[in-house]
Structure formats: structure tokens, C-alpha cells
Length: 369
Image 1 (cartoon, rainbow, N blue to C red):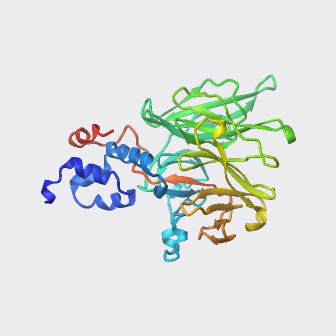
Image 2: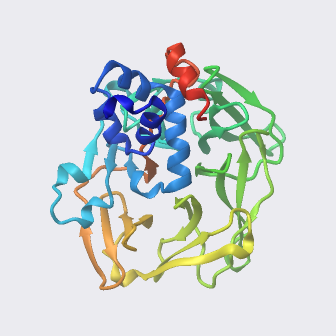
């Protein structure tokens, strides 16, 4: 019976399985090792993941120390701490911060540049330093994403500096994983960006503020990775008593949140990309219901059971149940300068354009992607 199963059927079945299962199935045979390791298969698996249901594949990635957190698992009383949190040792390239995420790849800021890492397959790639690293010690913004037109991943990072006439100019550089090189991009009228951008729909996004106090206006500014230009801003809903400070991803949609020094933590989600009228409130939680934080309370994830994962300052992460006001603590290590965000488990390699591929495997998989 098994001999009658064609390779097309095997590929179809395997492409629907979780990455952790596929990593184990590499040991079945040399043929399966070659098939699952091939990046044509990785692309097929990613496409099905995005089209069907990405939620089961999502995990939290946290920097300093680098850890992967199965945030849904804490809702199961039978799991142990090791199942919930997995630590990653990158040796000398221990990162000091996140610089963006896309398709299961994490761009990490390290002492002498960047490193792209897949926390599921443990494959990593150290990138060469850029001129911007040498000229400007402080990066104001950075991001990481995918350009489908060239089938390539890009790191975007930039810094503002004071020009001779006293004005603020921006230096913007882009690294292409396929070519393995940095290049400087002409940039004019760059909005005042800060921190790590969020990738979605071929663009990296940041929240920008104009004005101050009651007259503050906010918007989301996308940087298109195909055009390498800043695109039309996406309006943000104006909510009384709220200044949105962060941007995230939930279920393949952008969400914005506020959680610093205010009586409530609130998040809104954009149900249709780019449509201002599609913003709806995702949740509101009174600050008194959460553990007291001195700096910030950041919503990281919204679980399938409608619970909320909050990062409290840099030392605590909780799973909060809004129905009864109870919470559980994640067993994370306490360090300074911790950043946390959602990542997905994929087979995508950071060595894009440099992966080994047998002719028979590539020929068999090419028609699927």
C-alpha cells in the first residue's frame, strides 16, 4: 500500500505538518532529508502556513537572553517549564536586540553588525558590517522583510544625523540576503522613525507621531521593500486618553497598543490592510488588574483561548485571563533590555540564494511554488 503513494502525495502531506515534526522526519531516509531541507519545499510549506492557519506555528521570540516561548503551552497545566521556554546559544554572537522578523527568520543586532537566525532550524548567518555601522554608532530605526518581486529578504536600517546647516538628515542602508551586500539608498523627507519596524504585506511599518499633547497626530508609515520608498501613511484611530506607542502582528493583521503610565491598556486591530475604517478595538484591560510595572506593560500576543500575553517591564511575562482577572507567569530569565515579539516556525533558510539543491528535488518541487 505504501509503495503506491506517489511523491506528489508525500510532498502534499508533509507540507501541511508542523516544522518540529518535519525536523524529526528528516531522519526517516536520505530522500526525506533532501526533500525537507530543500528551500522549494520550505517555500511551499510557508505558503500553506500563511494561507491556512499560522496561529499554531507562532511563538514569542525574546532577546537578551535569546529565548523562544510557546505562549499557548502555558495554558496547559500538564506541560513543564522546558516545554514552554527554549533557550538559544549563539556563542560569541549573543545578540543585544531584535532588528526585525519575517517568515520565521529573526534579524538580530550583535556587537559588530547583524545576524539572521532561524530559531526553529537553528540555522544562522552572520552578515558583514556596513559603512553605517562605522559612521554612526547609534541606529534610530531598523527592519527586516521580504520582497516577493525578487524573492529576497532585506534588512533596512538607518540613522538620523545633524547636517552642516543644522537640519536633520537620514542615512539609510539596505542589506540583500541574496547578493550578500549592503548598499546606501537615497532618502528624502524621511519621517522621524524609531525602533524596530513590523513586516507585513511587502513593507516594514513604524508608528510616527506629529505634534504633541492634545494635538498629537499618529499614523503608520510603511516602507515598501520592492520600491525602497516610504509609502502613503495609514491613519490610526484617535481614542480619547490614549497615545498608541507600539505596533505588532496578530493573525496576519497589524495591531497597535498603548500601555505606559495610563489607567488602562488598550489594543486596536486593522482587519483590512490599509483601510482606516477597518480598525476595531481588540481589548481593553484596566491597569489595576495587572501586576504593577514601573516602565511599561506591552501586549505581545492574543491567544486562541482569548487570553493576553503581557510583558511587564523587562523582568516579567504573564498570561492574563480577562474573564476572571487571573494570570500565570512565564518561566523566563530576568535580564535588562529585553525585547519580545511574535515569530513563526518555518523552514526558511537565512542562506537565501546559497542553499544546496539537487536537480531532482528542485525539479519535483518547482511546480508547487
